[in-house]
Image 1 (spheres, rainbow, N blue to C red):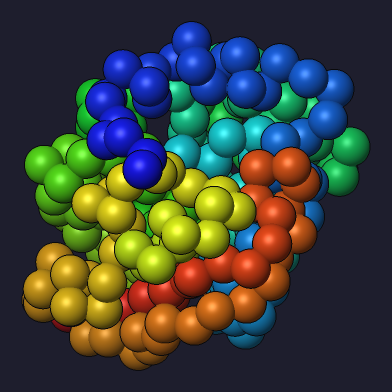
Image 2 (cartoon, helix red, strand yellow):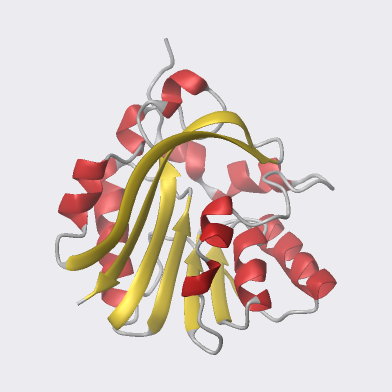
Amino acid sequence: MLGRMTSKMFEAPMWDDRYSTEEYLFGTEPAAFLTRDRHLLARGSNALVVGDGEGRNSVFLAEQGLEVTAMDISSVGVAKALRLAEQHGVSVDLRVADILDWEWVPDAYDMVVAVFIQFLDPQQRSTVFEGLQRTLRPGGRLLLHGYRPEQVNNGTGGPPDPEYMYSEALLTDAFAGFEIERLESYDTTIEEGAGHHGTSALIDLIATKR
C-alpha cells in the first residue's frame, strides 16, 4: 500500500532534482486539455500559469498570443522554461516562487491556468484555490486540470495519495461562486514525457468568475 505524502516531498530541492536532466520531465507539448480548448485563448489577454514546471503550458499560451506570467518553485524548471520559450520564439514572464507565498494580486488576470498542481495537501489546496479566485478579474476564466482519486491505482503519474486529487464534488464546492462552463471526469491515455505516461483518471474544470 502506498504511504501518505508529506509536504517535504514537494519543496524546491525535490523538483530541482527531478528537472535536472536534458529531457523535459513532462515533455514540451502542452497538456491536451489546453489544446482542446484553444478557442478560449483570446489573443492579447493576460494569463497566469501556476506551478508550470519546465514551461510547456505557458509557452503554448504565449504562442497563441496571450501575455503570460508563469511561476514555479524550481529554479531548474524555470531555467528550462526560459530555454523552451527562446526555442519557440516567444516571451514569458517567468518567476521562481513558492505557490504558497505567491502574492495573489486581486483582479489581475483574464485567465488563470492550473495544470496538475496536485502537490498541495487539502489545507494548502484550499488556500491556493482562494488565491486563484481572487487574482482573476470579474469575467475572467479559470482552467484547471488534474487527476481524480482513481489515479492512485493507475500509478501513471501524480501523487500516491487520493487526498491530493480532485472530484467533481470538491471542485463544485471550492468554486461555488463561479459559473461552471465545463466540469468533466474521464479516463484517457496520456503521453507527457516520463512523468505522465499511460492510462489516467482525469478531471477538467473551466469556470468563469462572476
